[in-house]
Image 1 (cartoon, helix red, strand yellow):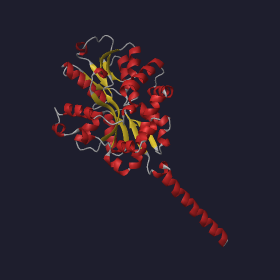
Image 2: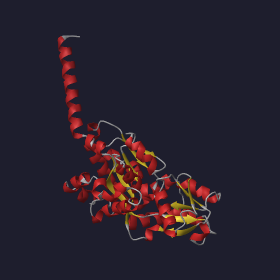
Image 3: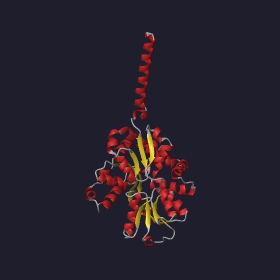
Image 4: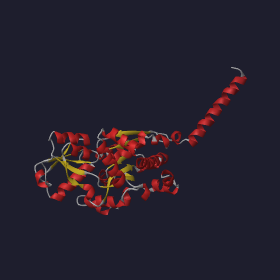
Length: 339
């Protein structure tokens, strides 16, 4: 190689390095150093914002290299997150709050559904609570949001010693268990409530009628991830807000995605689900940033305080990290995504 050719090679290498440096500074995706693992706990509408984030390529749009994974229950997601195997997740409120009370590094960074959005669905012959005496309520996992709801209902009836709560699996598995009469009742969320009704099962308790804020589904992470990956957190929250806006704006796309992940082809069930969640359940961007519910967290702390003394001394603010959303709000991102 001649001296002139060597100089040309060096110049090309310098130019390439300059371009890569420039791109790393301007392209969020190149600026992020790791794959972000995002988990969801149920094949239901409560996880639709995450499904849309993936299928509408919103992770990539906002510069995030993300892997979306299904983990059967929030109570299983929590230990995976504490072990560093999951970085961000959708989760029912109680498991994360319980873990945080025990010293676990778990915080809510946004809300998805800030009210109860499930029902107790039973075999058709179950007409009243007393008919469930000696029976079983099937749930996904102990410690899950389904478990909390089942305990809440059974305790309210005063039938704690008369009804057994058993682990079965996800929403599809518990419906199969109902069909086989291996259980007499379960906790379901749309579209699976409508699917179950179409199969002849009945809603005995509609928890959504309870007028109380509750972190049915929140976005959780760890302070460690927030501290070490602030740009990844920012990109995730942008993609999440973009997803909420897209769901509200594009029903056909959203229903298609919902059917795909819930494995439901019943258009009526999907329409009922979409309308219910967009009208009543999902946090509403028109009302402001999608913060988690502090009142709902206090509701859970009040429940836990009967058996956990630490819950009596805790404040809802101890279980949330709101700065990520606040910064996006101050930067005008909410107005941008709502255009």
